[in-house]
Image 1 (cartoon, rainbow, N blue to C red):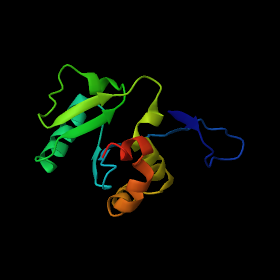
Image 2 (cartoon, one colour):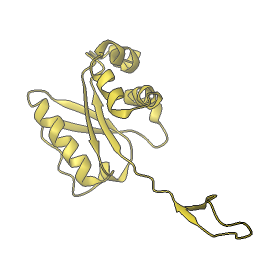
Image 3 (spheres, rainbow, N blue to C red):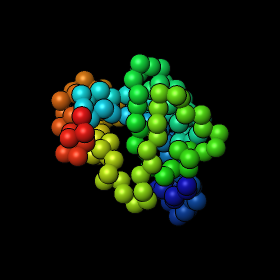
Image 4 (tube, rainbow, N blue to C red):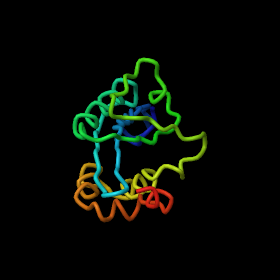
Length: 144
């Protein structure tokens, strides 16, 4: 993206100087257990199938002795034919335009309010009571 910016020049001369704005994005992959507030996060450079696969692999290894029901939206990398879902993870796809059904969405709002992403993630990971209070919807709590 280019946007003209003011700069110093000799009197009577109007220079044309473009300033290039480069935006860099990072992507936060996350999973939470509403029952006990346990969180897993992975900061990745892109949002693609390879990064989602890496996140699933990390999640699967960290909780190898657990069966995981992971609620996901309709992002293309969640539906990819190249995705190999580990045996202990089952993906539950949300219907379109229904992010409010995903308990993780409320936690994303909490994280977005923090200025520094890494500090916000550490704060959330270290406070399972907060995570539990934000993500444990009544219909989820009744299923425990």
